[in-house]
Length: 129
Image 1 (spheres, helix red, strand yellow):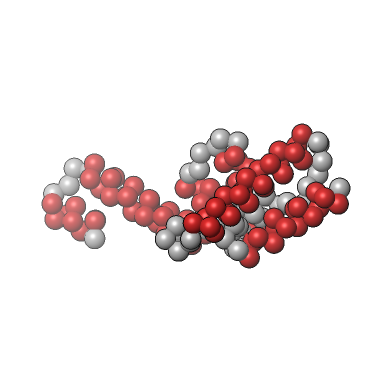
Image 2 (cartoon, one colour):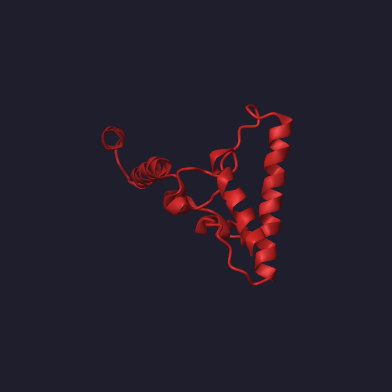
């Protein structure tokens, strides 16, 4: 049990590095975006090895039917189980980006409605603006 706890603590501490996002609610763990241009080959390899370790660790805990102190984000679990993300999943991941994209979607829907209306060009332009 001490071994499992030690591994979980080490993986959680990687939150300060490049492995996990630091702005998730409830301190849940979700992979951070990586900019390959900013990372060297050695650091990128280290990140891949840490994710491989995390995957093996989670799998071993599941096989051994053990609880682990690794607060993996529910969204990450859903993605690992094959669920495709949609716009509403983004709300839990990045609220600001979700709000901006939602506004764009509302505008796109409204434009489509206006385009489908039988309007003269002046009325159409007035509605669009």
